[in-house]
Image (cartoon, rainbow, N blue to C red; front, side, top):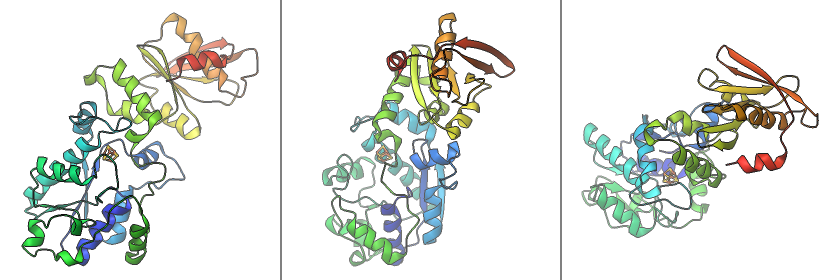
Length: 333
Ligand code: SF4
């Protein structure tokens, strides 16, 4: 259960068909709404979308942290990427294998998903749904309740564990039927797909992610590196030095949390952003970073601005001229 509408509907359809359902929500670290909660956006719900929608429809849910293993899937997808850094086929297979393990552990009869034939170009074509079922070893035990009537009957339907007549025949990209069903079932708290639910499909995020992969050993890439990709403007000053500049107070506060690990910089006498400096700062770079911070503060029209750097208990102050836009443009990732 992602927190989106389709998985909630699939769940509800099966509950109405008399199935005893348990949902799994996989925490990958790349979920957009999870990110909003993590950085502390006030206008976003603190709790997880999947937990909210599960509570609304009254189904038990387990939150499973797969982030560590998932990162290696994202870095080395066997089936490649979609338009951006989204390895949708590997992602589906990996989650289904995890669900299969769970099915076997708890003695469940089948795994189900909210997938709809033809809804997504990469992982939800008919041939890909079949291939994924085969490759995960879930033949006959993988039910897609929203499109089941368009697919061959599973063992579950053949053995009459679930009445096939109670399943649906949805296909394609239109959300019309799903929204009507949501109304019928009284489901309101699902995550809206507008703007995307997964950072890996986002072009700007993917560009920043590729930059990390290029400049860091794979073993050194941490979940904090991943979380920071969704925050601020990113600048690469050298292969070993990156600067992230917050875009609002929420991001500034989030970046400040890393002050024990990295240098932070902020204008002294003017309101402005926090910058997080990741990597060793060489002598030439202090002034450049200060100038970048000054450019984004309210004193950007002044000839000079004082910028304070701090790292744990260490600090230093530089007086710099705000950077010209061309300099920023040449560093921007
Ligand atoms: S969009 Fe993201 S979460 Fe969804 S299948 Fe693709 S990689 Fe996985």
